[in-house]
Amino acid sequence: MTADAQVEPEPAAAAEIAGDRIEALREFARDLGAHGERLGLIGPLEPPRLWTRHLLNSAVLAPLVKSGAHVADIGTGGGMPGLVLAIVRPDARFLLIEPMERRCSWLNEQIDRLGLQNAEVRRGRAEEYHGAFEVEQVTARAVTALRKLVPLAAPLLRDGGEMLFLKGSSVQGEIDAAEKALRKHRVTRVSVEELGAGLLDETTRVFRAKIDRHG
Image 1 (tube, rainbow, N blue to C red):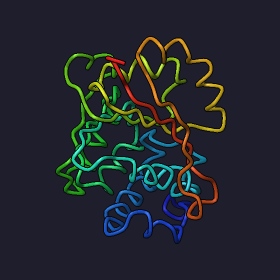
Image 2: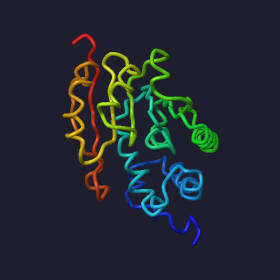
Image 3: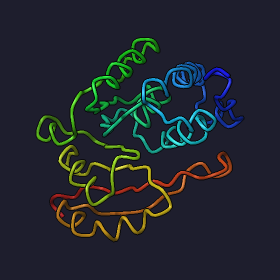
Image 4: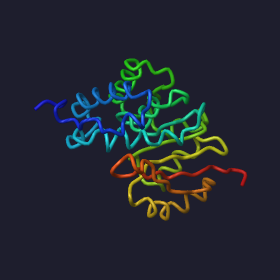
């Protein structure tokens, strides 16, 4: 059986979530499904749940991205959520931060293939870019626990900037464990939102918070 044959069929909700950007998302899905496992971008169990677990899980974050915002995505990996968001939100700009050269090459190829004008790859770790720029929003998915992720993300944000981290069912425990880091980095207005209700079988949990350095 080929890799393509194993890939999850496109769910009905995909077109509703991606809107007029669905064709570009389909192109990305085809490439990721065909080559992602071989390139180490996704695990061997992931093609049969590629759309629901990875693409749409990332794409439902799009309504929280501000129009015109500069967004840094930490540990982009195979493109989730940063490249998916760049596809469905052409009105925002995305810096895709990824340390692995092979993954950076993949991301650059996809940006060129899809003709994305709003995405740029930065090879390295998030902490290497502290002081290099400030953005309005930072995203991350499956990178590390909040107590470690917050110190990586906070210095990338301007005052008043926002964290949007995709998290699992243990997110409240992560928030409790990150209390010291949240306080140190002046993280306020912490909430957990569930996205995709009525569209996805399993909703996406998002840790959402602001930086308030002068509060």
